[in-house]
Image 1 (tube, rainbow, N blue to C red):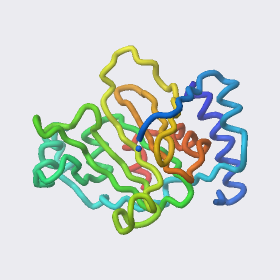
Image 2: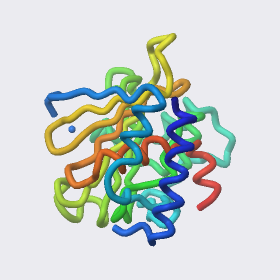
Image 3: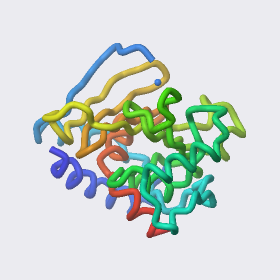
Length: 225
């Protein structure tokens, strides 16, 4: 399924680039995109999908470093980042390099909705154990302005949440689309992680699926910056 989606998306991205890439919530509907024909119909219908490479965005927490170069174990790194956060919130600002080191193999999209200029990133903790929350271990905000400089409803175009896959045998790379208040959400499982991406109203379903289907290992993306 995912391979099919990625192949289709690659064609879309190529077409979009040739046109200069122009330009969370009660459940009310669920659509599962399963077979090849349904994916083809969903992906190719409609106008040019407004997406662009993630390479040009600003990672606002990029300068944070809890000693990754020291070769510390992930649990030690996680503890250091919690201490740096001071315990004021379970969401602790973290750099993409720290998240990649703490959550090996975690993936992030290579594409973002058009208009995204900044990405915020946090590790998410369970206050009772002071370790990462298994249901949501990391969160990323995709913003059209400097994070928190304007209301979320105006500047946060999408949110990616990542948790641990705690159900062995869960089908992987099946993309489910839910309509929620203020937008839609795409969910899927890949390896050790469960991904959920919220796209605010104004980001089309096609663009949301294209972004979800473009993930690669976060560690690779950090090396390419």
